[in-house]
Length: 437
Image (cartoon, rainbow, N blue to C red):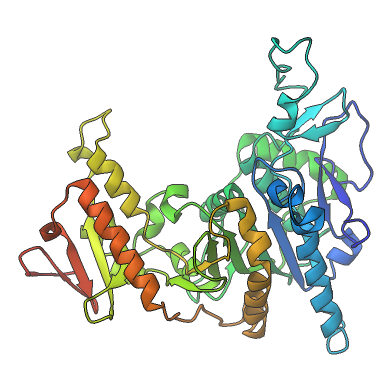
């Protein structure tokens, strides 16, 4: 990565020089600050909490593709290749790159490096019968980066929002994988306001910080200067999620309320690339419109399926309120219903070309992701009016979704008469009586 112009940046001191072995630290990869400040487009890569820095899939690294194919190396190479193609047209197209490290959050003083929980468990022991070394919260944790979610928050607050690293008019293109996608969704939902236009997502001027984050910010500001920007903030132009958990398995139910603008932003500027048997780039689902989620039917499950004539229809299954379920119990019916409840889409879903393993999604789909980023940039980028177009879902996909829903209904024990069908914005109960939204 150094040869590609993306050297290590060490946290929590934000220095390109490796700290002493006695000081707990971890590395991220980032374009040097002088170049990063000048970049108009900045790409953030957030991996899974179980992986080493920059690694996407050891399954690919160790079997068929090698290090480049199983890591962000191949993605960065493609980014730079596309920049080189455009260099004769626009000299300001050199991208900035920041690669987060949500996995290596345990620091070993004997090894002098940060490592994942898996590597920590593999450290030498007295014997095979002895447990792995104990984690000392004071000496083996890294200040401001004790968890994957805290690490993402640290980098966003102290690097992305720091004018010493990122210019105020930069556009952010975020790629997040698996658990990294879940954590960045939580971070954005909690900290970032959505403007009425929904054309971009600005980073907050005054984020909500915990006591520990406030202490960390004071420590960083003594070394690099204040991180709060009082000029126009960098904007999130696009958000690509590689096989994330369904949106309300990773966030509170509040974003699904029609009055919330966060899911509307996700529908306009985010896409999920998921494991699927279909070819790479096949549309699987459009974003569910928040206007089609009336509060009286929440919480509920909706999914796009096919009517007998082949037209697209949305099926909605009301889910019992928590008060209707005995405390401390989880019946088979509820598990099936909650599984179906996950079929609400707050962003368009696209087949990645990988049909089985989450860690292989981005290596399979990165070309499609970068193509979409270019589409967003051509539509005006962070300040433009781009919104995801309505995708035409293939009939085969709709029919498969219908079969999956019928199986879920049958396993849950719910009769088909209890299914509420929403077609062309009209809702009907089991007796055919219209329900006002």
